[in-house]
Length: 387
Image: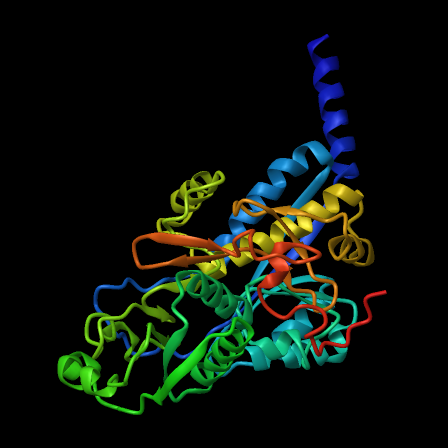
């Protein structure tokens, strides 16, 4: 009798395994040259994004036990100066159709336009460039991380409510700084905010040694409500607070910063996600980790709801009005069909505190208040076929 039940158990397990839909997900990481350390106080984050994918796979497999789905991950780490395109093409040859890409914007554009990418869905979890959601948009790329425009609009809405309507804009001289400063200017114009002064930080020396002497002189102006900074690399922005000519708040890439995720966020059940991630990774979840986790969960949610794992069915549902995703931000997340950007709130945070979650619901929109962040459909230059 015991032997009979053992045989029956083995048979049922084999049948169950055969009936399980396996969903293969690839995580593609482009390594970049390590920049010089700006502070010995900040630990170097290793595996950003990868840990988010791993947690997403674990969460999806927990649900998959009951829905007959199983998720597997392939991790590809492309060394500095190696070809990301070759690594991408190899993943496509091996049959991967869902590729989570932690790559630069120019690399993402190249991958999306390659011949191999025609039947692939790429999840952008790192590149914030607005061009990727507009003139350089692609039908086979969905954007998980918030764009520069979404982050800038979150800042502008908060400052509009605070009546900080006169900005002193300070930007670095890199392409990334220029890109974010353009997003800030767009947001200022959109919300009727005036940029009363604009300067570019061109000093090449270590700002730590001369901040108290140079920054007060550099920030002299008649009057302003806030200093808005675009310093993506963090070369000088950290030394602006408490050193400006006028005692004013600092916001932007330093000071009060718009984030996709922050370690102090605990509302709407976020604390349990924070704890599970910390237990797994031994560090706090960052923006790319969160976007990577969301990418896997978006795939899992679509497979669960449609009971199909093929690319066409998953993508159709993911971009439909029926799709929604729980992201621990107080509202359901969904995709904009016109540029395939994930709608989501943006967190405004300092180093050790969460200040606000934007947009606030009093910023009205005919579709959803989330569409008050970033490029709305009439503004977008993306020409995707959304029919």
